[in-house]
Image (cartoon, rainbow, N blue to C red; front, side):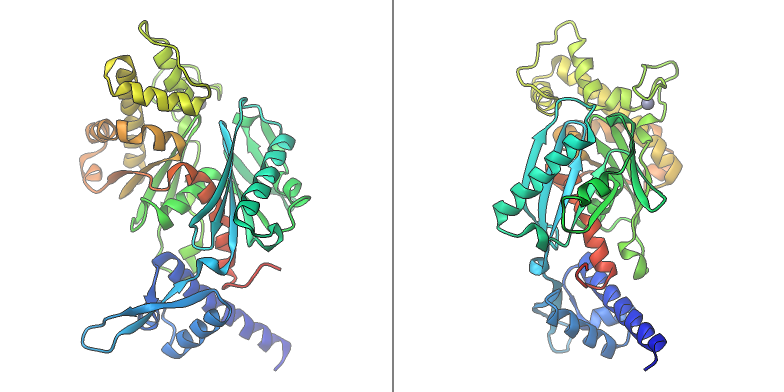
Length: 406
Ligand SMILES: [Zn+2]
């Protein structure tokens, strides 16, 4: 064979492996016959690819399923043990590091509270390295054996001159080469992206976005972001990243409203961001000081107090109304079939505000669009953002057809 033919054969093989593996990853256990139907590949090709993937330990047979009249079919599924990935959530209240198996089951997490929103990049690097060390030792794996480390940042990642630079005004970061800084000390591939975007991917794969055509995944915390995640029937696109609207928090919902830390006034975030919600409560004449320290613990305390009605309950009611207006605007603009409330603050106050959010959206969204959308709570728990970041190395391995990073 000429080199060009060898190259083409190798590309085709990788393409077919990636197609079958991606489908198995997103869809769960599937028979060879169904893989043939949905892939457009021949049954011989699917058989060969599946055998290859089994030999490489990427997938395994997973029992039998009955078929109409015919003999039972063997299901194939992705093996979690194939490898480990790490996801890092660099938030405004905490830095969290999660270790996940290849199917994104959580194996260990390490969470460090951070007091100030003006975090120095070097101190964040220190926490990330300590966290990776802690989670790999908890589970007993070597850092060098990880498939990769994904980092979700509350800002934009721009590719400039072959480097990924992080712009995160809320952290006071401008053009921080965070990935390169981590690569100095981590002997594995490091990937970086906006945290709302990666969270959207995770909710689509494993959470409340499953089965949606177009989902808006809202990331609620001190800051407020949203990603628009679209599913694709196309094989190659199944692992591609979603588009994003991460500055949703700075869309204006109130003329001449409150000042926002972005410099504008009346932004959504100035009303539904976790610190704004706490400040609203403390400004009430009958407010009681919080017993706990830290934004996350205090929001949980507020939600607990709201169960007895009173000021805390009024504040959550108002929060639900502002959030509902922000969501209604997104619905009128983007016509999604699913909206997911995610992120740590979504996890903390989601159940308390969901009915009022839905009611506000019903009043403000155009009725035919409201009729086709479901508003749900995220299903990924407190480590949602870390899990989202962990999708970054997973996507790379899917795209390579299950080859290990060099
Ligand atoms: Zn703003």
